[in-house]
Amino acid sequence: MNTASSSRSKRHPSTFQQFRHRLSHKCLSCLFSLADRFMLLLGPVLIVLACGIIVGLTHLYFRIVLPMLAGTNWVTTHRERREYWQERGYRITYVESAQDEDRRISMLQSLLLALSTPTGILHTLLVLSFLANIIYNYYKCVVTSNTGPSYAMVVRELAEITGFNYPETDEEMTICKNQLDRSIFVKLERRRRELMGAATAVANGADGSSKIIVNGRTDNAGLHGDVESQQQQQQPQPQSTPPAQSTTPTNGATSQHNNAMSSSNNRINNNATNQPQRIPRIHNWQLLSPTEWSWCRYSLQPKPPRSHYDHVTKSLVLNMDHYCPWMFNVVGYFNYRYFFNFLWFVTAALFYGMAICYPAFQNLNSRHYREQVLAGEEISRSPKKIFVKHWKSNAFIPTPDEKTPVAFGFMMCLAVGIAVFCLGSFHLYLVLSAQTTIEFHGNVAKRRKGGWTNPYSAGNWKKNWEMIYGTRYHNIKSTTHMGEDDMYSYRGCLGVLMAMMPSSREPEFLPIPIDGKLVRRKNRGYSHVHEDKKDDVELGTSRDHRSALTKIALDISDGSTESTDSKGMKERAMRRSPQTKEITV
Image (cartoon, rainbow, N blue to C red; front, side):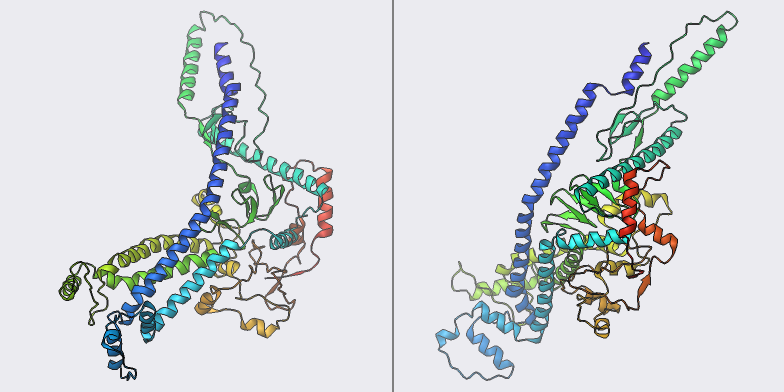
């Protein structure tokens, strides 16, 4: 009896254990809430810091690096400026006094002198192009919202193409919520039965009362609190144990009875030494098919495929990648292109800055630097104020005043450039493989099993690239003719660079492909898609595919009887299903 009661107490958590679990859940919720508010406060600080880094490196270029590149940093007085122009064949008509000729030129005059050379002009144009792209993409990534009218239009188009009956009224919203929750619950139970079966097989025939670790806590196999929408579930009823029958073995069966007891004790000891099996955390979106909808219990609205709820911005985001505090915004479907452009333009600009700062950084402690400082000490009138002039023969030797800015600029470009390059390379892989950061971490386990293919891939890296950048670098206007629109389509390596140029166009295709084909949006801003495009692909001609489009994602595939509400929603979905047979791809 003591053994049975102890096993029953271990099998079912006590009231104290339930209270401790709820308390830990509340503490974690408070910590997550504080973290979200901290991210909101951190965003403006990081924006100011990013703007300060951009301004500081820009000032370093125009104040120190540009005169070095142009070879004009030795010109510091009006006399030397006259000498500079005379060496290039220009005649100076104005005459200045001796006192004025020894006066130092201003910073603006030094900058204009450097910009008068072809080298200075080319470097400055390249720097300005980097600045324009960085500032534009950073601004658009910060201010672009992943909600609003554009989100509503994309969600409606996505519901139409996937055959989902998007609820419009409160009554339909309630019916949709119940059906989607029931579908998730059934899928969860099926997945948990599979996991428990695998755990039982690993435990070498252990019975169903074996312990299984769920989310780091030991629990009975029947409990499931690892899904965010399934936190309040009923506990299984305790199994009735048969009453113990007191039997007295005879003298002939004594040895057999002892052998049975010893084998039973050995089996109990082996089961006690076995570690409890761990069931991995199951998220709702991991139970869904690629085009299946679910219900978001935070925003209280249908959750489209590839969408996630962002707890910082309190919004449901299509193709959510992550929340970026540097952008003070969540990176998703509408601003991912700006984020990707920002990463690579920053990488190119920092590597370029590192390259042009390296000659001066290399001469910081060189023999030429020490000789230049000694020459400045000899010509200085006062030992307290040593004026060091740049050498005319080597413009890449910095002065003591320029030593710290040059070292800081080079190290900043090197460190931040490598970090941003690593992040940009990771996102380049995500773009070419049609994944988001959330999906990448969720697909790690599937990738290890082998035989896994990404359901959101359009077939090859080029199509996956077009899913983000589209096929045109401008919005398709309603007045644009066929020939004019084809002229703006980018092709080749130059087209890839053209696609990354500043543009306020919205995404051209829907967030998910259908049967491996990209589906072009109908309402992309003020865009218009012609019906006689050459690349139109007929979808929905076959009966199987048409039924797949009109099938509601909340169907329960375990053979259970469908409710009247589900049938009613299916009938409305059939009536609202798209009547057109062509979808532009």
